[in-house]
Image 1 (cartoon, rainbow, N blue to C red):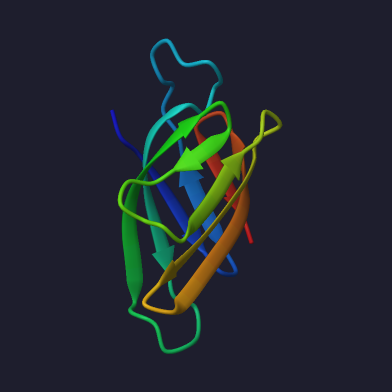
Image 2 (cartoon, helix red, strand yellow; image 1 turned 90 degrees about the vertical axis):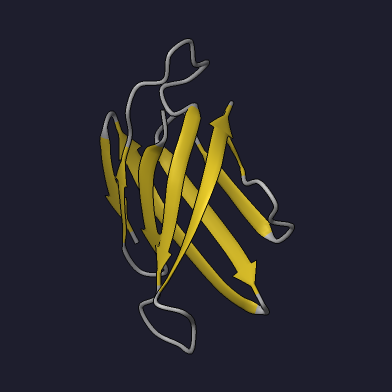
Length: 99
């Protein structure tokens, strides 16, 4: 089951669903959306990522980094066509937020 994960360069909102047989509360498939706050980027970028043992891995993206710590802190950054976005936040059960 995919779970939505919304991140922006300045504000991020996250929602999580418990993953069956996951090693941590945040393991599983997530839909990640970067929403542009400023700059000459597209309005949003959508990616499906997987969290496993705190490592966020995307399919088909060479310039992506991300993690979700056991404490719930989360960070992701992506570069698409030489434009980049990043966001940080905190997961708390099934919700989250951040900058």
